[in-house]
Length: 126
Length: 225
Image (cartoon, rainbow over all chains, first blue to last red; front, side, top):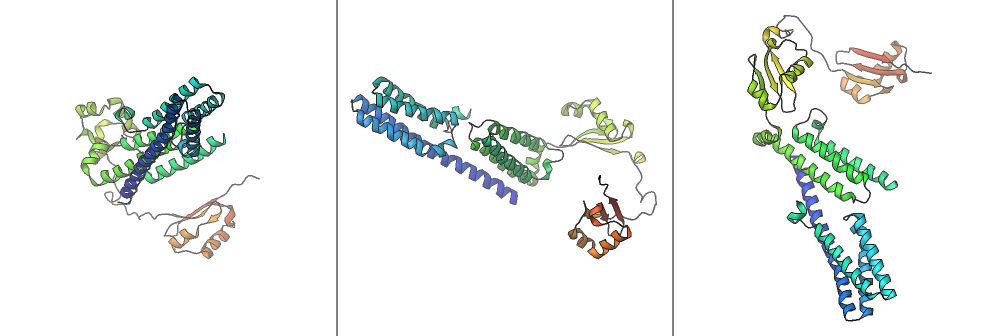
């Protein structure tokens, strides 16, 4: 009976940890992607200052949770996003508008996609 | 490199602990479910061990999940005959009353060559001596010979024999095992006396065992200078 309890506990802990990390990943990804999408909206209004601030916020959010995200995501994916964010910031500094917008769109989509890949949808499971 | 080193140590320890938790059944002949689990665990651990870009958790979570399922199933198979049959199968008669059951051989996909090979491994070269042969769930074949071909036990042969006693290791690689001494009801003074009789210090003893009747096995170390 002891082994039954150990087995059930292991499964329960693993399941709980998987659900909690999924929720945490979704929250972090949503926060970062929302900032990038806000940057696009600000850019379309020609508000460079807000757009740049949003990108900086997105980057700081991503970097703040880098350790946690590194334990969940493929390191190559999280590195690609980090470089993407750094590129967008440099576009903001140089004033490359179209590249800034494209970078924001691409990186936001990538962040949302990564979070989506972890969700227990049938197409992810199969 | 250091990351690979640390990951390998971590995964090795997790795997060893997992196999240990599954019990000693893993070490001997394995049931189909146990075989699958052992193969799975080794493969799951290998991927994050080799590829540093994959988070360790992606290897750890499947290991813990498989371990949890295995522990639950092992208890359920212990308690339920139906579940045991489902996961472990059931023994199948291959020879019954001296007759080879061809249908059962086909059903279990054991051919005659394999059957005779297994019998030869058990020292049975004459098929006509076998009354029953059973394919066990772990893939082994158990046999029961006709009584006239079975070796007679001492009781049937009316030979007086004494029961064997379990020998306890008293000295191993020069070290006196006091725990085993206590189990035999002996003490270190007795050991010293035995060693003096053999003119050999404890450090020079490779193995010394004693059973409850006082029968001693003594092997000296052969040290190369």
